[in-house]
Length: 253
Image 1 (tube, rainbow, N blue to C red):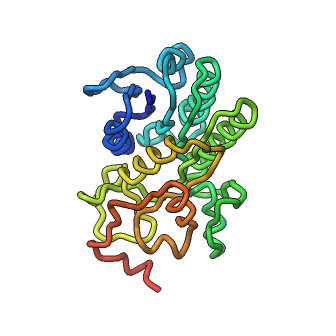
Image 2 (image 1 turned 90 degrees about the horizontal axis):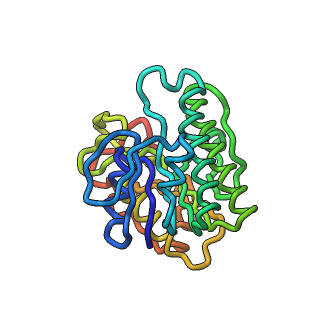
């Protein structure tokens, strides 16, 4: 399968590429120049012609891009909505134009975070939305991304996997996607390669519809969120579960 990965040169993108390159022919898209042995496109997902060209001849798209977390970027919706939301809409439109049959969106468990704040077990059928406060702009873009891909699935039949990870970190270094080194772990920790594994399995599903898959690596996650569906439907099992690290005492029962 020929797969386009957006945001491919970023922290998350590296983890997805590491897994998908074993089974697929890759084309990588990122706004920053980068080195890779794979096909690459350097440009922004917010540009229609860039996206159209990147999607030509592609079988599946992995939407993994996000606007940079540089200071001030998420203070207003301008850049985040241009990149995260408009970029996703352009990719879906290009998918229709080029008859791309599958999309995997890397969303976020944050789209249902308010449910967990009320001590509710997080299931696949919960309504999405944000409760305000810190991070509202980022989470609004993730909600919008899900709305876009769901509607393109409904209108055009694009087989769609919505992957909802939580706290994206590298198990080997305990460094998160913002470059922060962690001392402890908790149930929310999700290795970027485990996300890649879920994407790989979802793209291989012959009967994929439009489905939500929670992807969290830590063993304690099953107490809070429906990981079982992901395990059973995808045959997915985390390969990087953070169990060798001390737990954050703030998350102890």
